Image (cartoon, rainbow, N blue to C red; front, side, top):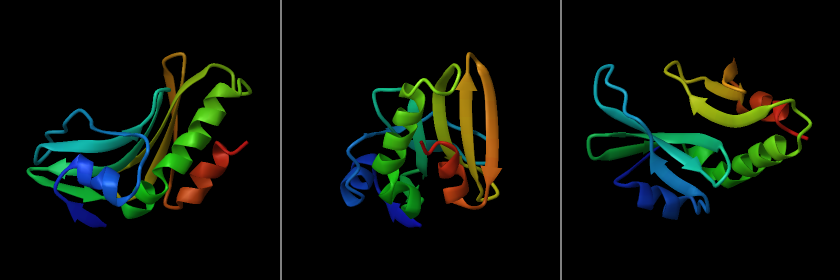
Length: 124
């Protein structure tokens, strides 16, 4: 994990072409804003968290954000998957990854400790 000061630093350090934005905050213990890499389609990769003035980055996801977003776009645009409108890749509190597939408002998710297992699901 890396610690940086802003989403702009994240974008520059990891050469992310996609948009890097702060998501909706969570107020469980501290105010935490997820840092999301996204593009014009409905896909997003959770690449870190903003807590206070510090951005903690999940290096593996940040380094591969553009590649993962391209796979997500191809998956959604292919039309081979009935009604999939949204694909998100998140890091959940136990450190595992979660792939969320939204089909007409019905969200299905799969969890794994191994990133590649989830990427294989959206590989065409």
